Amino acid sequence: MDADEVVMLKQDGSNYPNWSHFMSQHMIQTRRQLWDYVCGIVTEPNPGHENFTSLSQQWKTKNAEILNMICTYVLNPSVSIQLRSFKSGKEAWDYLAELYGHSNFAKKYQLETQIRATKQGDRTIKELHGVMVGLWNQQAKLEDRDLSLLSSYKKNQDEQRLVQFLIALRDEFEPIRKSILCRLFLPSVEKAVRELEEEEMRLKPSIVSEFSNLSIKTEDSFQIGKVKYDYSGGFDQSHKFNKPSSSRDRSAMYSSSSVTETNDWPSFLGGLAKVAIASFAAVQASRTLYNYYTEPGTELKILSYNVCFREDLEIHKRMKAVGDLIQMHSPDLICFQEVTFKIYDIFQQSSWWKLYRCSVSSVMAYTKPSFCMQLSKLPVNSYSRKPFSNSTMDRELCVAEVEVQADMPLVVATSHLKGPGPGPRNWDQSFSKERVDQAKEALTFLKKNVNVIFCGDMNWDDDLDGQFPLLNGWVDAWVQLKPRENGWTYDTKSNKMLNDDWPVQKRLDRFVCNLRDFKIRGIDMIGMEAIPGLSYWKKGKNNVDKRPVFPSDHYGLLLTICAK
Image 1 (spheres, helix red, strand yellow):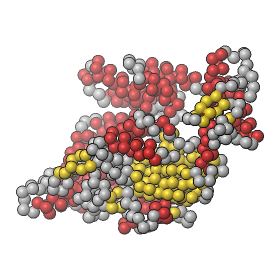
Image 2 (tube, one colour):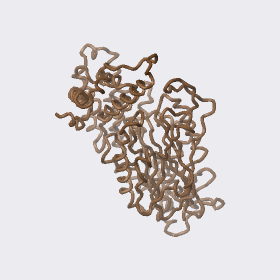
Image 3 (cartoon, helix red, strand yellow):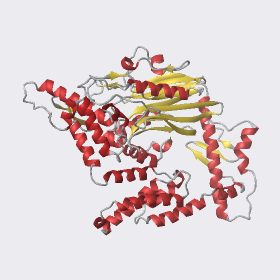
Image 4 (spheres, one colour):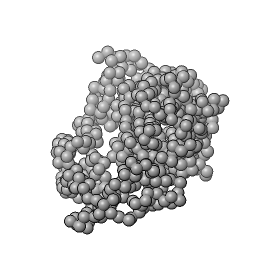
């Protein structure tokens, strides 16, 4: 293999010996000076050296280049993120050697990756169990025999396998999954499988079809906030949300509650049927409530926010501050970037969470190192994801199709486009071509929609990337409404939490829109204030200083639109 061909070999855990050989040969043949840093010949300069400043700058530049090179050729995103936390190429190289260099470890890693990636999909519970058992048996062959005989090890292994199996389940099994995990004494995998098979039988469509033939008459009603709804009269006329006026709408809303309860069914079926009718009525209520948004002058708010995945930097207090901003501005749709499982878990426990429907399940959140996430108060027709064709880091376009009104669809998409590599910006690490291609791919995919908003952390640098590749009819919301303001959502000068050793002031985050039935009313930056009373110690070029903590390293963008 030629030195240049190393770029074709991506390190996936199982091929570490070959990858490390070719990577070292690549550096020795093409960048010998870099290899001297990796193997420890060149060490970090002593502060007492007379040329310390220039040597230190060179040390940082070379190690940033090495880290970027290694991360580029490592496929696992979670490993790549860990590598970026090291300050030298040698530390990263030694970490990979420790992680993958042991006997059988590459195979163990490959199996663990396969287990995490296994999902139920269209399989039955029994079929999924068979797949997992096959992988577990392969793992068992690699285990230390003496260790596997210990009862404590066996107990831990059984619990781990139970969790792995539960993670692989489809979302429809979420209630029983939570039930199992909350028990004082966890069941064995085999017992859990039996319970899940019973639930699988209960959820079969044949049972649902029997309930659909049951009809009852009831005078029951329910209330959403101050809005009262009953099955025979719709919404309380005293509220501004009125019941549908057309006969077709009335027929659709009330047909399930218009005939008499049948005495041939057991009473508990009647109770379940009432639940079904309540669910149906709630859907109709939701549709009627959100017709409100099409009234002239009524606003919709969409928030885009990169929340910064750094879990070592006051993660709980920062996410609480993000939640406070959500409660203050009450956006109807939210597009987050750089969410981790820990951030997802914090959000799930927040009081505002229950007001939204989320695009990411807890299972999906557990399996990704960081991801984009969408939340909506409006009825959602679908959530979907489209991976970018040029991404090696699982970057994707996340799309929400929401229902404002039957003849007024709205598509909101978000992404986190390819960003620059680590370290100082004095060598080619911009990845501008990749970023521009991703933006073009996203807009090409979205252009078929009549009302579409694309937002997120675009990592856009007008100096490097040129103008954003807007198509005909598309507008940049900030440029349209605030052409005289810089719109810097990443600003090392105003956001004192950031490292200002290499000053950056860029409009990385953007909203671009193509709207037929809506007009853009406003756009604002949020999260621009430090969290009161909170600080941390930041290591700079030559010193360590106390810095305030902001909700994120980015500022959020809040877009307001209304019906034309």
